[in-house]
Amino acid sequence: MIGEKLTEIYDVLFKAFGPQHWWPGQTRFEIVTGAILTQNTSWANVEKAIANLKAAGCLEPAALHGLSLSQLAELVRPAGYFNIKAKRIKSFLDWLFENYCGRLENLEPLETHRLREELLAIRGIGPETADSILLYAFERPVFVVDAYTARIAARHGLIEPGADYAQLQDLFKTGLPRDVRLFNEYHALLVRLGKDFCKPKPRCPICPLRDLPHSLENEYR
DNA sequence: GACCAGGCACATC
DNA sequence: GATGTGCATGGT
Image 1 (cartoon, rainbow, N blue to C red):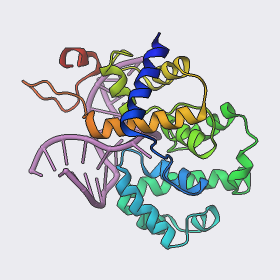
Image 2 (image 1 turned 135 degrees about the vertical axis):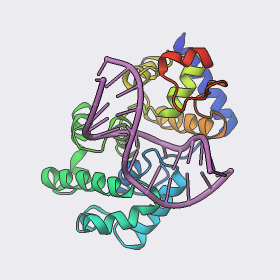
Image 3 (image 1 turned 60 degrees about the horizontal axis):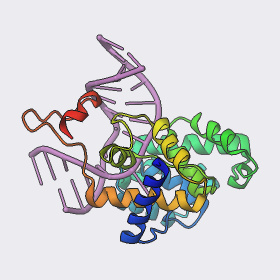
């Protein structure tokens, strides 16, 4: 029955917005890079950074790996947190070259669970980034959870406010058929809905704390 | 000028 | 285990 609800929401979203054509990127490496660059950042800013990398001929592993940290940081500057993100992209590349000859194809044979663990062990790659890479770059049936997913699910009473990543992922994993195309479109549609309509946490009108503790979210919903 | 954006790591209690 | 903070550019 939670599954029916999830399916119903999907149908409504798809009818309203149509296919979102995710991931917005040509190559697998562009998707991986974009997944790191878009951390807590609007896609419009990420596009500028990706355009810089492309213009510099650095949107492939070897070329990017050859850059210094400061060169890389300068190219990704428009995406914000550029020093941090440069390090994160470097960490990924170091791992890729040390263990897989710098070739994304060499990750293909890995079992999904194993690949996820390896990605999560890289500093700067958390659950959402890892799952985005798994779903959109490697077409594994993994549901991607993000801030919009959490907000929307909580506001529709599908889950307790303050639910963690694993709980949210489990909600969709349990309620839906394990289908790459469905997971691809569903996450993209939730982001679309979130951007257009689901603004951040409501604030207490009397004392608008910047971040309401999860324990109080029910009070101000 | 405040707020927000397709997170994550780390410090502190 | 929960909560707070730093990281930063660019659009509304």
